[in-house]
Length: 149
Ligand SMILES: [Zn+2]
Image (cartoon, rainbow, N blue to C red; front, top):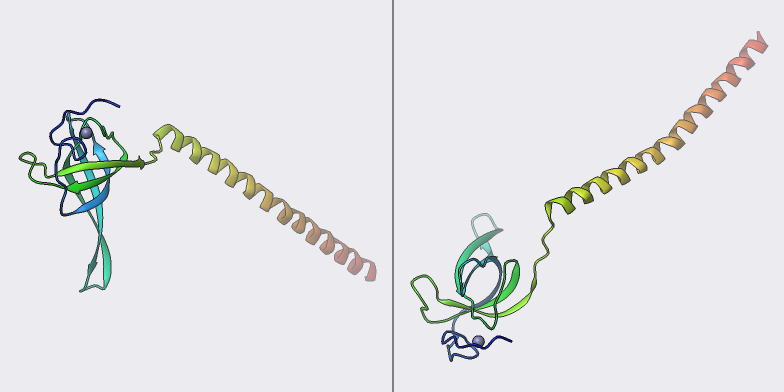
């Protein structure tokens, strides 16, 4: 593990975490020692008696010993003001959000379509058979009628 000399680290720097603690997803880890975390809040709207999803993005301090990356699911804690825009710190990386790449997504779609078309063919076959049977019955009926005449 990298040595941590960060005074703004909750483990090695004696930074106190108090207030809000929540979990979110890192949407950007481009700045050094900072990540942008998006969190989703589900709020009840009394007027409509329904829930609404709200999203918000926050700048969060990312100490070297934690080193959270994009798409990481992280636990974030509230701290004192660390800079002009930061008053939160990453406490732990909990996991990674699964991201479907465009190519993989297209391949999966193709497979699905192929499966669907195969199933459609399978469903069609017995129907054709039934139609054939009907025809045969009609033919037999007609032949009977002709014979009667
Ligand atoms: Zn540290």
